[in-house]
Image (cartoon, rainbow, N blue to C red; front, side, top):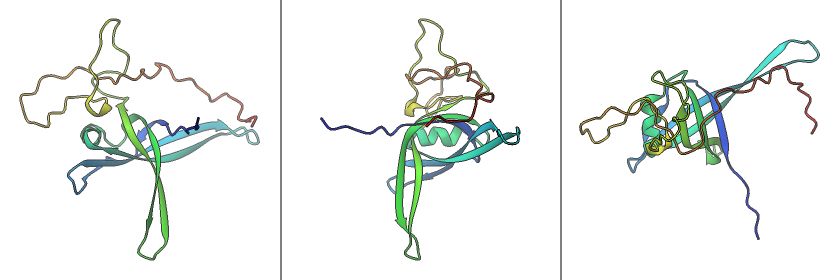
Length: 176
């Protein structure tokens, strides 16, 4: 039996700028955006708190791209699931260039003003979101009469934990 690798990315952070929503030649929307994540630790030599921020390039396609473009803005806190993909192209000078991006298959708006991303009450099942995105309002691409959306439409994925552990006091020595 052949072994397979795992290509899965989970990121939660803040948008650096509004998403860039464009359309491909076939008419499909594509949203490009960057999310910042930060690590905080205590430097053992100086006993000072240190912080390092990483920027992650994210790409969403089709309905998910439309939803991200409409409801997510600079500073929004997002939870993104997807896979890594590296693209290669040749620039004008004939030099090979590479870029690694997260291809999103699930985006959830964590800091919505209308509610929270807590799980529904026992026995209540919410419908899955189109494009697997959590939105603060319903999308209405056909222009038909709009009905009020539920407070938060959740994916079938398990919800985020209500408390995220604080790792500030952890020892930063890694045993491997």
